[in-house]
Length: 177
Image 1 (cartoon, rainbow, N blue to C red):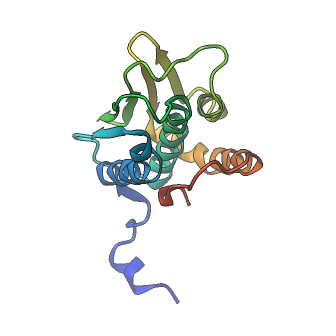
Image 2 (image 1 turned 120 degrees about the vertical axis):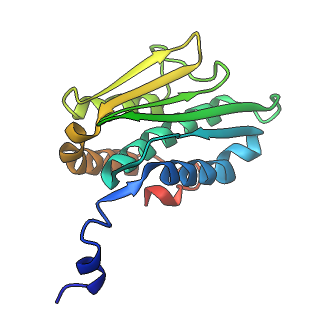
């Protein structure tokens, strides 16, 4: 017998409010790893609307890995800094940027998080692009939500298997569980 909630709202679990999702994720990151390093996280998701849950989880994985890279590079003694996570959407095309006072770079010896983000994007067969602007301290993630959504379940499973092989450095944000 089907759940009565599913009968009332049949697509409730397939799409989520991307603004709330990203805000919750960044709040969790702020509490678990950024605050102790005196890094503030600003979230700007105006007009992102609702996105498939798998797309939000993909963004969550990518943002967490990039923010983790910043945390590893920022000594506790350093002056306060800010990371800004911005999400914009026009139609199905989404742009998410993570920027932070020159703390994000795309050098050849990129940190583990950036390598994972690039690997996940590559597994999506060109439907997701990662671009770095080191002079601005920004990494951009651009994709068409309709194109990546069908490819994500398998890609995220492989991504999580890769994450499971690495040692845990700190708490895993609840948004990724």
